Structure formats: C-alpha cells, structure tokens
Image (cartoon, rainbow, N blue to C red; front, side, top):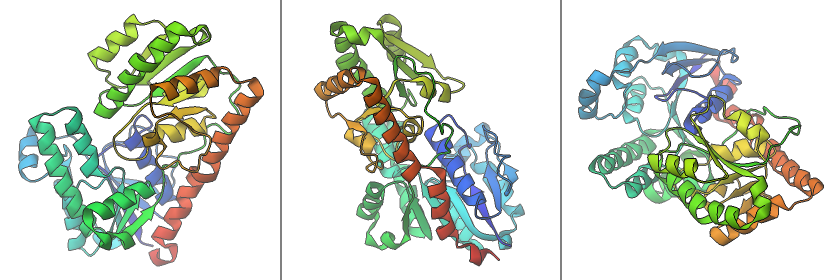
Length: 383
C-alpha cells in the first residue's frame, strides 16, 4: 500500500494556530492512509495516531541560516531537508502533503520523482507577510514579504491540490494567481478534536483573549480593545467590575505588559503551559482582530468549549455557519456586546453557549476534516 509523506517546517503542537492546524492534517491523513512524517520534533504527543511513522526529525541549523537564505529559503530546517531527501524512497508515496505555501523547493524535489503535492494553505502568504510589514515597516519585513509572495506564487502554480481554510482564501488565491488554480482548490476549514463534549461544570467570571502577543495584527487589536473598550467600560459599568479580562499568549510586548500590570480588571498570562484550561473556565471569548490572514483557530476552540464569542467581521471569516457568534465592528458595538453578555439570564447564556458548541459539532469537528481528506486521498488509489 502506498503512503502519504507529510512534510512540515513547523512542529505539530497544541499552542499555536499553525501547530494545531498541522495536528488536524496529521489526524485527517492517518485516518485514511499510512503516513510518514518529515519535520521538527512534535511538541505534542502524536503517538495516538497508529498510522504515522516519524521518518526524519529535522534539526535546527542556525549557523547555516545565511547560506539557506542565499539558496532561497528562510527556513531554519532547509539544510536538514537537503540532507534527508537522498534517503526518501519516493516510489512508496501516493502524494506529498506540505504544510504552508512557502517552500517551492519541496515541490521541485517531489516532482523530480513524479510524486504529486497537496499543500495545506494555512494563510494566503502574500497577505500574511504584507500585514506583518504594514504593522512594522522594517526592511527585513519587506524582504520577507517579497520572498514569501514569490515563493507562494511558485507553490500555487506547481501544486496538484490546494487545501484552503475558507472560501475567502480560495477567492483571494484566484484573484492573485489566476482562475486556472480554481480546479486545484479544496476548502477544508479549521477542525479540532472535541475535548469538551459536555457543558463545562464550572465557569469563572472572566473574558478571554488568546493568541500570539507579538504578531502585529493581534497586538494592535488587543491594545485597541483594552484602551478603547475594556478600560472605559470597566471604569463606568459597575456590573463589569465583577469580571476580569484574561489575556493569554506568547511573547507579549513591553507595552502590553505595562498596560496589563497597571490597570485593574486585567490579568496577563504569559506563555501558558495549557491554554485549554483557560478556555474551559472562561465566561466569554473575545477576538478583537481587524486584519491578518487565515482562519482563526481560536474561534474554533471557543466554539468547542461552549463559549459565547464576541469578535470582528474579520475573525468571523470561515465561521459563517456559526450564526450566533456576536459581531462587533467598532468600540460602541464591542461595549454593547459585553454589556449584553453579562446581563444574560442563566438559561439564555446556556442557550447561546450550546448553539455555538453545536455549530462546532456540525461544521468544525475533526470528523468533518477526515471526510474531506478521504475524498482528497481517494483511498482506493493507495493500493
């Protein structure tokens, strides 16, 4: 039986959107096929997947970083990839499954051996790196934007299949790279395992924001929310003083640390070991992000954990079928949404929470993703 070769230059994990997305890919593949893995050492246990084999663990090569960039890669694992490819038995694979549309050298190598490539499009990289540059106008960010825009163009042109998260991403790829890519695209949203099948027994009175606290759009949105929405409302509304705002994520900026440490009603959780514990006990989830790229994994997590959600139109992208997510486009709408949540009667609160969890079950559970990959892989062709 032929296998799928999974290649990633980001480690599978439960702590980042990309890492969680890679876990989704691995589970979806291994439920339909044998799978060999090439990538960094996973940061979470993937031993539960019986059909996976850790073929090659790539190690960092910081001292070769300049050489790798000259050779056309910003990946710290490029040198490790070059070393391992001579040992790959290409004839054993039905297809190569690649995480992120950033690495054309992987497609070039696979095509030398007539192995088709499926790319999981975590972000439209053209937009992702442009937003980083727009939020921090440095020469290095501009060069990264140029590099990865060009790399994505090559990847999209060469790949046999493109697995997008949203219809919006699909339309954006067509806009950027032409209508010819339309037939390559399969839409498969963020899907996660159901770790909270029953309504959580204990809720604490805090609103929760999560995410990378160094990524420009996240940081800008969170600081806006704290300064324009939370602090003014907390100071003026006696009911909100019964609640706190928890901001949980990695590598917060000094400015964000200062705000959280000096203002009442705000708690910063820097790089939590287990983010799930904060989801389980939260009263409401907030995602005040106005731009960026990709489908927000944290919204899927909030749905799965039975949480009311207040978010911007940008963060709703991909979750259109979750009809009870509360949309707020400005500070007035955000304040009104918070006041409405904290004034809900218990039965109305539970009804809203249950509706969100049901949307997760219907559209964003792992079972949905496994079915998409079953059609994609065409199990009969693996024999």
